[in-house]
Figure 1 (spheres, helix red, strand yellow):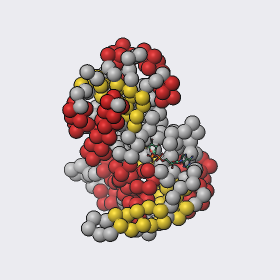
Figure 2 (tube, protein in one colour; figure 1 turned 120 degrees about the vertical axis):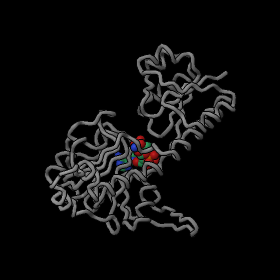
Figure 3 (cartoon, helix red, strand yellow; figure 1 turned 180 degrees about the vertical axis):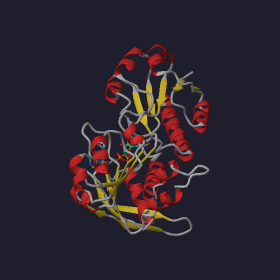
Figure 4 (cartoon, protein in one colour; figure 1 turned 90 degrees about the vertical axis):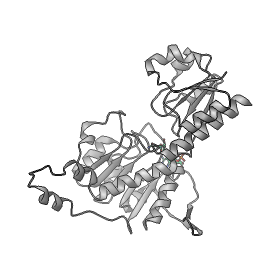
Length: 316
Ligand code: NAD
C-alpha cells in the first residue's frame, strides 16, 4: 500500500480521495528535526509552507518517490535536486489565487479605515479618551475611484485586478514578462464582461498608484526597497501577500516613518513565522501570519487537486 505523510495536514475531502484510491494517509505532524529518521517509511510527503524538504532530507529517505506541495511557492523544497534524484514533485498553483486576492482587499480595507489600530485601542470601561481616538480615525479613505498598481500579473495578480475592477478601482498592471492585459469578470446571474486593464512600466506604476499590491515570486533581492518607496506617491499604501523578502522591511519601516507610505498590509514577512516587533506593533501595519490560502474553499481545492495529482502519478 502506498503510504503518504501529509505533514502539514490535508483537507478531509483530499484525504478521502486518496484513501478511496487505496492509499494510506498519515496526518500526524512530524517535527522537522525528526523527519530524516522517520520519513523513509513513506512513499510520499505532502507539505504546505511549514515543512522543509531539503537535499539532506531527500538523501536520508531513498524510499521517497513524491513530494507534493499544497499551494504555489516551492521555496521550501529543493525541487531541482528532488527531480535529479528521480522524485516526482507536484504543486497546486491556481487553487488558492482567489483566497489570496481576497486577503489583499482585507488588508486594504483594514488600512483604509485603521482597523488594525482601532481594534487594539478600543476603550475599556472608564476610558475617557475614546472621542480623541475617534477623531484620529476620521481620515479614513474609500477604495472606489482610486488606482491600484499590481506588480506581477500572474494568477493572483489577475484575481486582484478582477476584484479591484468590481470595486470601481482603476488598475495599472506590470509584469516582468509580456502578458495579456484582458481579464474576464463574471457576475452571478449576469453576463461576463471582458476588461482590458492599463499596463505600465514598474516606475510608472510606482509613481501613479494609490495602492500597490505585490504578486511576484520569491527573490534573492527585494523587489521593493528604498528606491521604489521613493518613487511612490506620498501616502500610498503597499500590500505584500507574496513572499517575505520581496519587500525590504527596513525600507518599509523608514517609508512609514517619513510619511511616504500611508500604511502597509503584510501577509508575509522575513523570519516567518515570527515577525519583527517593529512590524507587529506598528499602528499603520496590518499583519497576518501567512494565511492567504487559509480558507475552507482554497484548502478544499488544494486537497482535491493535490490528491488527484498524487493518484495519477502512482497509478500510471
Ligand atoms: P504566478 O507565477 O502566477 O505569477 C507571478 C507573476 O510575477 C508572473 O506573471 C511573473 O511573470 C511575474 N514576475 C516574476 N518576476 C517578476 C518581477 N521581478 N517583476 C514583475 N513581475 C514578475 O504566481 P502567483 O500564483 O500569482 O503567486 C504570486 C506570489 O504569491 C508568489 O510569490 C507566491 O509564492 C505567493 N503566494 C502567497 C500565498 C499566501 O498565502 N500569501 C499563497 C499563494 C501564493
